[in-house]
Image (tube, rainbow, N blue to C red; front, side):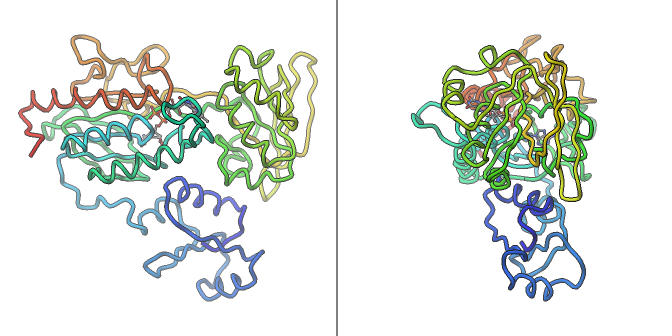
Length: 404
Ligand SMILES: Cc1cc2nc3c(=O)[nH]c(=O)nc-3n(C[C@H](O)[C@H](O)[C@H](O)COP(=O)(O)OP(=O)(O)OC[C@H]3O[C@@H](n4cnc5c(N)ncnc54)[C@H](O)[C@@H]3O)c2cc1C
């Protein structure tokens, strides 16, 4: 890819390639004079990103979807297969379902709108996953599972956003998974492993700077932009704590804005201790962000409010990290009539259904999206393994020979 290292186009595509373990090389015309002549050779007009692809073609300012398509990552033009199971979401729960289902001989397709790993993929270090006494990054853990799923023959479609699931079985005796790009595929069973989506705090101009200084995760790509800077991180939970400790290794200072009176009620003790031992993290309790302002290159100033003192303060801030929790991602179930609990999580195990089956026959839910799940990597992986037994039962009741 040819483009300015920290431009929003490069960051968007780099995030996608990196999160999905796709190899690439970045050439920045500002740092490498040869890149300018290379760019001139490939493109005669102004551009933000030039993507020179393995087949020799050059894409100018491509979307993530266009690049993925050119790289052959989403190949479903002629997919008439009837799958045993379609898994929506490639976080820990989806990956685990895929590995166990495919290793037991089922025909499996897995779709994700952005990358494998889900929320866990954004975690710099998972310290409580069994068997890794010194911790492991979510990306490394998910990457291994992704390769394992591929080894067992799972068909992967990333990026592929599911818009809806047609549970009516009107056209065929199967469930239809419909994608936002108009494609669809069919499966005897569907496992919803869509986890959670990030919550957004109320603040003026927040949307305008998403991807241009406002981040919902902290990976090495964002960390690179923070070197020597003062950055702000909002949130008081464990993911906020992990993010702050990680960013403090790169930024000059991390200012943590916490809505409550402190961290004790919302964060694990070991993280509180680690933050206390990190001299360049400053905690400001009872604070919230108010307004964002910027320029052509992105976020430039942030105003926050001390709720107790009722005083606002504006500072030059280029990077703002938001870790304010998440809510269940069930939008693709609209129209499917699956039972949700009052908080919007998918209810399973009611009215004689299997423990992980929703109120719709053949539609299962695992991981963070499921009502009553523990919201931990270990829990999500366990549910992914367990749901496969229910899928076998369902397939047997349909008379499907899944060991062929
Ligand atoms: C920063 C951070 C740190 C964490 N640290 C820890 C930790 O140390 N230990 C621990 O046990 N837990 C930790 N957690 C929690 C843990 O990551 C989650 O419990 C776990 O990831 C849940 O897995 P999941 O597969 O259910 O959902 P998710 O991880 O949320 O994955 C859901 C996937 O579904 C995809 N998706 C959603 N909707 C659609 C759609 N319509 N079409 C296609 N794809 C879709 C998403 O892109 C996503 O990849 C952390 C979470 C965060 C955010």
